[in-house]
Image (cartoon, rainbow, N blue to C red; front, side):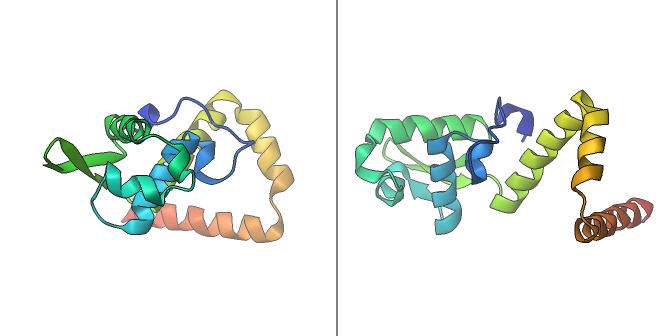
Length: 142
């Protein structure tokens, strides 16, 4: 899956997945990940926080869009209804999406990004970051 096709914008004023996915897309994906099983749209609809205020066709359009973006995959059909599973786990999606955002920020604003990191790195954060960098270097060397 090419994460670049998943979102067009980063919305820092939102929380959680809504920073990189639309509001309804986020709720649908969170529902799939929480359930951990293949589902039909009719299974998803009542589990969504917005629930009854959404039409069935809105959820069909949203799941279709998520499948086109590579976040859901069709695993079967029941009559005309499609059965979906997440194409990846929540953590893998976050890793890819945030990596894409960070890559774009570093490419577009390298000096500002470096200055901000320097400004915001507390000793604890610096220690954690250093640990991550050492793990990356060790993995690349093996």
